[in-house]
Length: 234
Ligand SMILES: Nc1nc2c(ncn2[C@@H]2O[C@H](COP(=O)(O)OP(=O)(O)OP(=O)(O)O)[C@@H](O)[C@H]2O)c(=O)[nH]1
Ligand SMILES: [Mg+2]
Image (cartoon, rainbow, N blue to C red; front, side, top):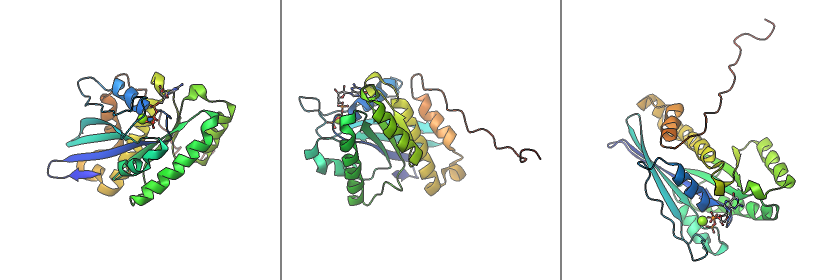
């Protein structure tokens, strides 16, 4: 994270991690399509001839939240095994992680391997998945089966991070994954920088500003039901 207090500019780095071909680049492409054309920066992808990410993709999103200029820098890592050192470099200074798992039953082991690979690469950068905001997206829902649904249910039950299903190639679930991560990321930096107290900026405003950058943002999730003030039966 970079926080330039003089210019009131906050820069956050969000990394899309996951096994090869799980749909990381497709997520960024779909997100790009959903950003208001007058607001979107340049989506830079650098692929091999067969569409595999060679170094990384980047997509910037710049907006104002209160008095603050916010830059979200989205990155994808290359999933091919041989590009591990690039994955490690891309993770440097990450503020948040979207882990894109592949729903195909044959990819279960691969998902696990890359999760462990991410944990290791974070560690090499002095970071830990336990303290970074993170979400998991099970992409390629169209190719999943009952065993995928079971694995997802199990992960949701563990409740370590929000879990989303997606068909990124059709743009489904992409924005939901992103907005959830943005919300968690704000919470985290607010804990450290007290943006709420210092700048009067709260999570809801922040997420609302990001939603404003999007074409047809999904409806806001209903907030938790109010806690009754008096115990039932009192
Ligand atoms: N059926 C299906 N295919 C998808 C989906 N999302 C992405 N794909 C396809 O999966 C392939 C790989 O997608 P990419 O986004 O390039 O995968 P990646 O994770 O960036 O791959 P690397 O850059 O090699 O790590 C492409 O052919 C996509 O069109 C999905 O939800 N369903
Ligand atoms: Mg890619």
